[in-house]
Image 1 (tube, helix red, strand yellow):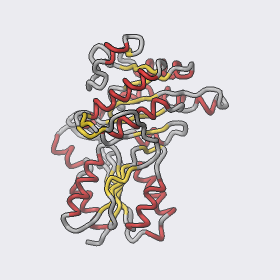
Image 2: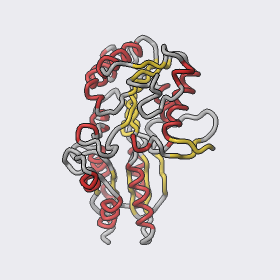
Image 3: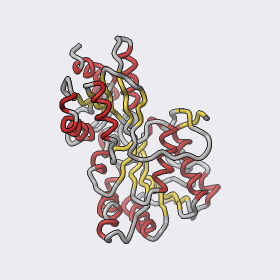
Length: 325
């Protein structure tokens, strides 16, 4: 095991897959000569050259479309969006081309492509650069949506995503690129759609994903100080969702809190709440609580950002309400 940064884990995944398969290439804004906007692709241009690490103009619709065309013709593109806020410019290619090609061609064409980049708030970037679109993409048949929370998962899941024959949305966080964590040595992959129980517990289940796992785990630590034993589940992907892991946990703890950075309407937490009440209603001893961002565009001021985003205080309070404490 080695301790490396989140960005280094992503880089290792891409480098290993590009060495393994010469059909894999990286394309996006500033990925080559600048070594990546967040230095995820540092050094890759030197090793693989300009034909496989490709700088693009500021034209997301154009280079996403080129990526889809390349994938249909047998290559395995990794398309980096500088932020998923900018993916809205390319969303027609992602949803109407990549996601639907297999179905519309009657199975004749697959689209083995990964769209990756940061999502959500990154601090004082205001309304247009701080949004979460996981539920948008997860609402689309034909896409897989992966959101890792730590370097080990980032590397293993990205390698799996690159090898997948279907399009994968791979969402990261600017605030996590410098995070360090232990990553195992040697070749490994992590299957998409399998949640990870980060902490076993018996009193209440906390479900989250991505950087909100920090809130979930910190909340469990605070609850433990008061003798409350929380089980914490990291979804790792939101399409597919590991419903079985959640339901089995709720059958044990009888209570559920879901922590998610996105806005509350039609969120991933809404889907989880529906599924649990549909398939584990008789096991619930309290209402399901959701901790989301407030239903407003994210402001610029740090004090307002802190007030609007999910946090430990709100999560602990919800857990205590579910436990009638």
